[in-house]
Length: 155
Image (cartoon, rainbow, N blue to C red; front, side, top):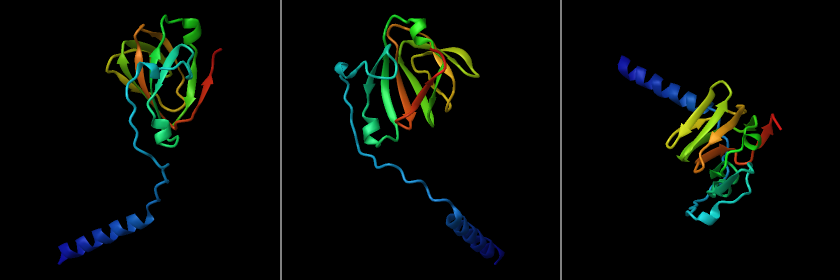
């Protein structure tokens, strides 16, 4: 009998939690997308003048909720152009190294070199700068939201 009462109380408690839980925020409508590899898809029209971007179609497919692109850094590395402290006003920014290597100086972490297969998450508004990259460096970057502001702290 005591076991049955305990089960009834547990069910009642779960129902109460369900009733009081906040409703999830409505997400933008998404659609299925495929982006096939094409060398011509890399364009010099992104945030950085020293990199080519290959948009993976996620921005449009998620109605701006997320951005995913491959960044191909252009040789040679020029510190005066590239190594400028900045941050991005984002909710999430994840980077994964596809080819080569990239060195960055990240607030609170110091300078680090990331190689093929390495990934990192930069918290929102985390100050950072690129301090070097290989001639063949390519990274996958995923950012939420898809449209965001970059604030340069050095000119």
